[in-house]
Image (cartoon, rainbow, N blue to C red):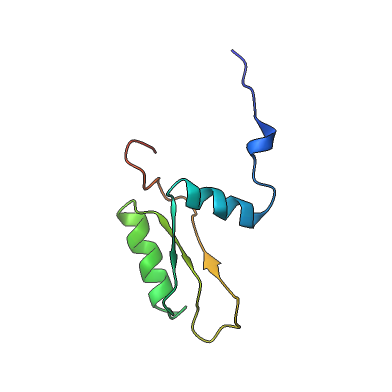
Amino acid sequence: MSLTIDRTAIPRTYRDYLDQLKSMGEMREIDDEVDWNYEEGAILRRCTEQCLPGPIFNKIKDSPDGFRAACFGMAKSGTPGQT
């Protein structure tokens, strides 16, 4: 048995990776401001525990404009039927 890898489908940048996750329904953007010290971690934990799509936070309290945070770690897929 041999494995063929489609190298054109591999994201080349982290932004490409996030775009790919978003198109697959594995990521949800959160535009509300969140506190990095409490809310961000609680939301990440809840998403992981409930097998929900991973969040990307577009507005972090006390962070420079344009700063975003995302974490997908070892979470399972939020798409039914996928691991």
